[in-house]
Image 1 (cartoon, rainbow, N blue to C red):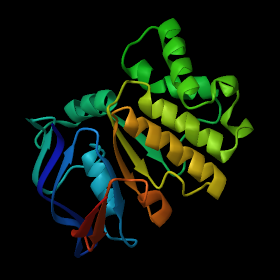
Image 2 (spheres, one colour):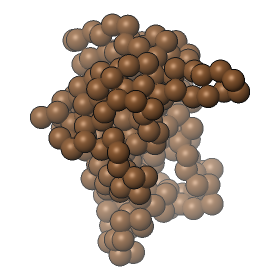
Image 3 (spheres, rainbow, N blue to C red):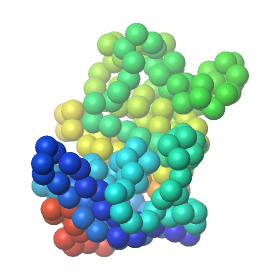
Length: 226
Protein backbone atom coordinates (compact mmCIF):
# COMPACT_ATOMS: atom_id res chain seq x y z
CA UNK A 1 0.00 0.00 0.00
CA UNK A 2 1.32 3.45 -0.94
CA UNK A 3 1.29 5.80 2.05
CA UNK A 4 2.81 8.80 0.29
CA UNK A 5 2.72 9.79 -3.37
CA UNK A 6 4.36 13.05 -4.43
CA UNK A 7 3.81 14.06 -8.04
CA UNK A 8 6.10 16.72 -9.53
CA UNK A 9 6.28 18.61 -6.22
CA UNK A 10 7.84 22.07 -6.30
CA UNK A 11 8.41 24.57 -3.50
CA UNK A 12 9.49 28.06 -4.45
CA UNK A 13 10.45 30.70 -1.90
CA UNK A 14 10.72 34.41 -2.66
CA UNK A 15 13.75 36.02 -1.06
CA UNK A 16 13.73 39.72 -1.88
CA UNK A 17 13.63 39.89 -5.67
CA UNK A 18 14.96 36.34 -6.04
CA UNK A 19 13.00 33.11 -6.34
CA UNK A 20 14.58 30.00 -4.82
CA UNK A 21 13.52 26.52 -5.99
CA UNK A 22 13.97 24.65 -2.71
CA UNK A 23 12.22 21.57 -4.13
CA UNK A 24 12.19 21.35 -7.89
CA UNK A 25 9.85 18.75 -9.40
CA UNK A 26 10.19 15.75 -7.07
CA UNK A 27 8.13 12.63 -7.73
CA UNK A 28 8.31 10.04 -4.96
CA UNK A 29 6.33 7.05 -3.72
CA UNK A 30 6.62 5.61 -0.22
CA UNK A 31 5.14 2.22 0.64
CA UNK A 32 3.74 1.38 4.06
CA UNK A 33 6.52 0.07 6.32
CA UNK A 34 9.40 1.51 4.27
CA UNK A 35 12.54 2.86 5.94
CA UNK A 36 14.00 5.71 3.89
CA UNK A 37 16.97 8.04 4.43
CA UNK A 38 17.18 11.36 2.59
CA UNK A 39 20.70 12.72 2.09
CA UNK A 40 22.29 15.62 0.28
CA UNK A 41 24.40 18.75 0.85
CA UNK A 42 23.10 21.74 2.79
CA UNK A 43 20.54 23.61 0.73
CA UNK A 44 19.61 20.54 -1.33
CA UNK A 45 15.97 20.64 -0.15
CA UNK A 46 16.01 17.79 2.38
CA UNK A 47 14.22 19.54 5.23
CA UNK A 48 11.81 21.34 2.92
CA UNK A 49 10.81 18.02 1.37
CA UNK A 50 10.33 16.47 4.83
CA UNK A 51 8.18 19.42 5.91
CA UNK A 52 5.99 19.03 2.83
CA UNK A 53 5.63 15.29 3.48
CA UNK A 54 4.63 16.08 7.09
CA UNK A 55 2.17 18.88 6.21
CA UNK A 56 4.31 21.54 7.89
CA UNK A 57 4.69 23.25 4.51
CA UNK A 58 2.66 23.28 1.31
CA UNK A 59 4.00 22.73 -2.21
CA UNK A 60 3.88 25.59 -4.68
CA UNK A 61 3.07 23.12 -7.47
CA UNK A 62 2.36 19.41 -7.84
CA UNK A 63 0.02 16.91 -6.18
CA UNK A 64 0.29 15.13 -2.83
CA UNK A 65 -1.62 11.88 -2.30
CA UNK A 66 -1.63 10.61 1.30
CA UNK A 67 -3.05 7.13 1.92
CA UNK A 68 -4.90 7.28 -1.38
CA UNK A 69 -6.45 10.71 -0.74
CA UNK A 70 -5.41 13.84 -2.64
CA UNK A 71 -4.61 16.35 0.12
CA UNK A 72 -3.01 19.00 -2.10
CA UNK A 73 -5.84 21.50 -1.69
CA UNK A 74 -6.73 20.70 1.92
CA UNK A 75 -7.03 23.64 4.31
CA UNK A 76 -4.45 24.24 7.05
CA UNK A 77 -6.92 22.92 9.63
CA UNK A 78 -7.58 19.75 7.63
CA UNK A 79 -3.86 19.14 7.21
CA UNK A 80 -3.23 19.79 10.93
CA UNK A 81 -5.82 17.17 11.81
CA UNK A 82 -4.16 14.55 9.59
CA UNK A 83 -0.72 15.53 10.88
CA UNK A 84 -1.74 15.16 14.53
CA UNK A 85 -3.32 11.76 13.92
CA UNK A 86 -1.07 10.15 11.30
CA UNK A 87 2.43 11.62 11.52
CA UNK A 88 5.04 11.82 14.26
CA UNK A 89 8.00 14.22 14.12
CA UNK A 90 11.45 13.95 15.70
CA UNK A 91 13.79 16.93 15.35
CA UNK A 92 17.48 17.50 15.99
CA UNK A 93 16.72 20.10 18.70
CA UNK A 94 14.19 17.87 20.57
CA UNK A 95 11.64 20.73 20.95
CA UNK A 96 10.68 19.74 24.49
CA UNK A 97 9.05 22.25 26.84
CA UNK A 98 11.58 22.72 29.68
CA UNK A 99 9.08 23.77 32.38
CA UNK A 100 7.04 20.54 32.22
CA UNK A 101 8.06 16.95 33.02
CA UNK A 102 8.93 14.28 30.47
CA UNK A 103 5.56 12.56 30.78
CA UNK A 104 3.75 15.89 30.28
CA UNK A 105 5.79 16.57 27.12
CA UNK A 106 4.77 13.17 25.75
CA UNK A 107 1.12 13.88 26.59
CA UNK A 108 0.91 17.12 24.60
CA UNK A 109 -0.40 15.71 21.27
CA UNK A 110 -3.13 13.85 23.19
CA UNK A 111 -4.49 17.10 24.63
CA UNK A 112 -5.31 18.27 21.09
CA UNK A 113 -7.04 14.93 20.50
CA UNK A 114 -9.43 15.54 23.38
CA UNK A 115 -8.34 12.49 25.41
CA UNK A 116 -9.17 12.68 29.16
CA UNK A 117 -6.36 13.50 31.61
CA UNK A 118 -6.06 10.09 33.32
CA UNK A 119 -6.08 8.25 29.99
CA UNK A 120 -3.39 10.60 28.65
CA UNK A 121 -1.04 9.72 31.54
CA UNK A 122 -1.55 6.02 30.92
CA UNK A 123 -0.84 6.29 27.20
CA UNK A 124 2.19 8.59 27.68
CA UNK A 125 3.72 6.19 30.20
CA UNK A 126 3.22 3.28 27.78
CA UNK A 127 5.28 5.04 25.10
CA UNK A 128 7.96 6.16 27.54
CA UNK A 129 8.22 2.49 28.49
CA UNK A 130 8.64 1.60 24.81
CA UNK A 131 11.68 3.87 24.50
CA UNK A 132 13.16 2.68 27.81
CA UNK A 133 12.51 5.87 29.76
CA UNK A 134 9.67 4.96 32.12
CA UNK A 135 11.82 5.61 35.20
CA UNK A 136 12.55 9.17 34.05
CA UNK A 137 8.91 10.10 33.43
CA UNK A 138 8.77 12.61 36.29
CA UNK A 139 12.03 14.37 35.39
CA UNK A 140 12.23 17.72 33.66
CA UNK A 141 14.09 18.00 30.32
CA UNK A 142 16.92 19.92 32.06
CA UNK A 143 17.49 16.81 34.22
CA UNK A 144 17.86 14.52 31.19
CA UNK A 145 20.80 13.77 28.90
CA UNK A 146 20.59 14.53 25.17
CA UNK A 147 19.86 10.90 24.37
CA UNK A 148 17.12 10.79 27.01
CA UNK A 149 15.54 13.98 25.67
CA UNK A 150 15.46 12.47 22.19
CA UNK A 151 13.78 9.36 23.61
CA UNK A 152 11.09 11.60 25.11
CA UNK A 153 10.69 13.26 21.71
CA UNK A 154 10.28 9.86 20.04
CA UNK A 155 7.66 8.81 22.62
CA UNK A 156 5.81 12.09 21.95
CA UNK A 157 5.95 11.43 18.20
CA UNK A 158 4.40 7.99 18.69
CA UNK A 159 1.79 8.76 21.32
CA UNK A 160 -1.14 9.35 18.96
CA UNK A 161 -0.52 6.00 17.28
CA UNK A 162 1.00 7.62 14.19
CA UNK A 163 2.11 5.11 11.55
CA UNK A 164 4.50 7.51 9.77
CA UNK A 165 7.56 8.79 11.64
CA UNK A 166 9.58 11.68 10.19
CA UNK A 167 12.98 12.55 11.66
CA UNK A 168 15.16 15.55 10.77
CA UNK A 169 18.79 14.93 11.81
CA UNK A 170 17.67 12.96 14.91
CA UNK A 171 21.26 12.23 16.03
CA UNK A 172 22.69 15.64 15.14
CA UNK A 173 23.01 16.81 18.77
CA UNK A 174 24.08 13.46 20.22
CA UNK A 175 27.34 11.66 20.86
CA UNK A 176 28.03 8.45 18.93
CA UNK A 177 26.81 6.08 21.65
CA UNK A 178 23.53 7.96 22.24
CA UNK A 179 23.03 8.34 18.49
CA UNK A 180 23.38 4.58 17.99
CA UNK A 181 20.87 3.93 20.78
CA UNK A 182 18.36 6.29 19.15
CA UNK A 183 18.82 4.64 15.76
CA UNK A 184 18.32 1.22 17.36
CA UNK A 185 14.90 2.47 18.49
CA UNK A 186 14.10 3.55 14.92
CA UNK A 187 15.17 0.12 13.67
CA UNK A 188 12.81 -1.60 16.10
CA UNK A 189 9.95 0.75 15.22
CA UNK A 190 10.41 -0.06 11.55
CA UNK A 191 10.41 -3.78 12.32
CA UNK A 192 7.08 -3.25 14.11
CA UNK A 193 5.61 -1.79 10.90
CA UNK A 194 6.18 1.96 11.20
CA UNK A 195 7.01 3.89 8.03
CA UNK A 196 10.16 5.92 8.72
CA UNK A 197 11.76 8.75 6.76
CA UNK A 198 15.00 10.21 8.14
CA UNK A 199 16.84 13.28 6.88
CA UNK A 200 20.53 13.00 7.74
CA UNK A 201 24.04 14.12 6.85
CA UNK A 202 25.49 11.05 8.55
CA UNK A 203 26.24 8.03 6.30
CA UNK A 204 26.15 5.74 9.37
CA UNK A 205 22.58 6.82 10.09
CA UNK A 206 21.60 6.50 6.42
CA UNK A 207 22.97 2.94 6.31
CA UNK A 208 20.23 1.87 8.71
CA UNK A 209 17.59 2.60 6.06
CA UNK A 210 16.56 0.19 3.33
CA UNK A 211 16.44 2.93 0.69
CA UNK A 212 18.57 6.06 0.40
CA UNK A 213 17.45 9.05 -1.66
CA UNK A 214 20.11 11.63 -2.59
CA UNK A 215 18.99 15.20 -3.27
CA UNK A 216 20.88 17.94 -5.04
CA UNK A 217 19.53 21.40 -5.93
CA UNK A 218 16.02 20.38 -4.97
CA UNK A 219 15.94 17.32 -7.22
CA UNK A 220 16.45 13.59 -6.71
CA UNK A 221 19.97 12.90 -7.95
CA UNK A 222 19.93 9.13 -7.36
CA UNK A 223 18.49 6.37 -5.20
CA UNK A 224 20.03 3.30 -3.58
CA UNK A 225 18.10 0.19 -2.56
CA UNK A 226 19.53 -2.20 0.01
